[in-house]
Image 1: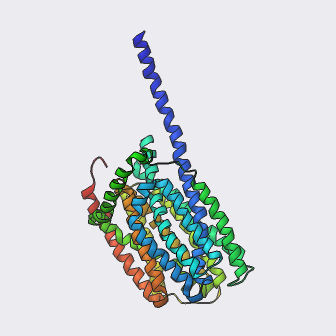
Image 2 (image 1 turned 45 degrees about the horizontal axis):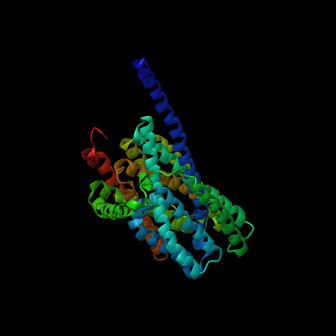
Image 3 (image 1 turned 120 degrees about the vertical axis):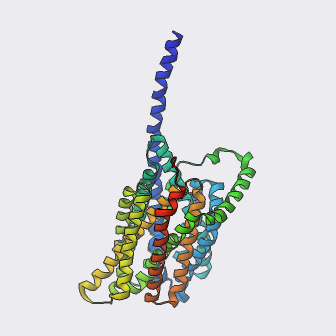
Length: 441
C-alpha cells in the first residue's frame, strides 16, 4: 500500500508541474502585449511631437536645440542607466521612464526656454532607463518563456522583438494621422491647433503610463528585501564599471557599435533631414505627416515580419544585409539622381523613399535588439545601455549639425557610416562569433 501511495504521488506530480507552464505562458504573452501597447501609446504622442518640434518651435531654433540637448542628456545618462535599472528593476524603470515623456509633452503646451530645456534634460534621463529597462524586460521574458516551454531561445527572442517593434513602429503611422487630423483646420503655426494636439497627446500618454503599471515584475532581486540593499548597490556599481569598460574590450561589442551608431544616425536623418529637405519641399508642411505615416506603416510591417523570420545569427545576418541594401539605394538615389519635380511623380518619390527608410529602420530595431539579447544575455542591462549610448550620441550629432550641413553632405556621411557598420557586422557574424560559440549555446 505504501508503494502504491508513492506511485500515486509520482503519477500526480507531473500533472501539477504540467499545469504551471499554461499559466506562465499567459503571463509571458500578456506582459509582451502590455509592454508593446504601452510603448505605442507613449511614443505615438512623443514621435509626432518630435516631428513637429522644428516646425512649431522655431523661435531661436528652440525646437532643434531642445532635441539636441535631449539626446545629449540621453547619451550621458545611458552610461548609468544599467545601474538604475538594476536597482529599480526593469518594470519600475520602464514606469518611471514614462514620466519624462509626459513632462516633455506637457512642456510643449506652453513652450518656453524655461519649460523646454529642463523637460529635455529630464527626458534624457527618463529615456535612458525606459529603453534599457525595455530591452532587459523583453529579453528576460523571452528567455523565461523559452525555458518554460523548452523552445529555441533565439527564435523566441526574435518573435517577441518582432511583436514589440512591430507595435512600436506603428506609432509613427498612428501619431502622424492624429497630428494631420487635428492640425488640418488650424493652419501652419496655429497656436490653437498645436495646443489641442499636445493636450490630446498628453491624455493618450497618461493612459499608456497607467497601462505600464500592470506589467508583472520580472527581477528576482526585487524580492531580496531592504537588508540586502547595500550589497545590491555595491554589486550594481561593480557591474556598472564592467558594463562600461569591459564591454568595450569585447570584440563583439566593438564590431556592433558602428551598426548601433548608424541606427541612430538613420533615425535622426529621417526626423531632421528627410522631413525638412525632401518631404516638405515636395509635399508641403501638411504632407510631412502623410510621409511619416507611410514611413511608420512600412516600419511596423517590416518589424513584425523580420521578428518572425529571426531564428539565430544566420537569419539576422541576411535580414540586416537586406535592410542595409535598401538604405544604400535611398542614399545613392539622393546623391546621384533625385531632384524636386512637380506632378504625381514629385509626390510618389518621397513616399517611396519613406517606405524604404521605414523598412530599413524596422530591420535595425528588431535585429539589433535580438542580436544583443542573444550575444549578451548574461548582461542585458549593460548591452542595452551601450545600445542607447551610441544611438543617442549619433542622434544628437545630427540635430546639432543640421543647421550647418547640407543635405548631400549629410547623405555622404550616412552612406559612409552604413558601409563601415555593415562591414563590421558581417565580420562579427561570419567570423568572430564562431570563436565565442559553444555546444551549450
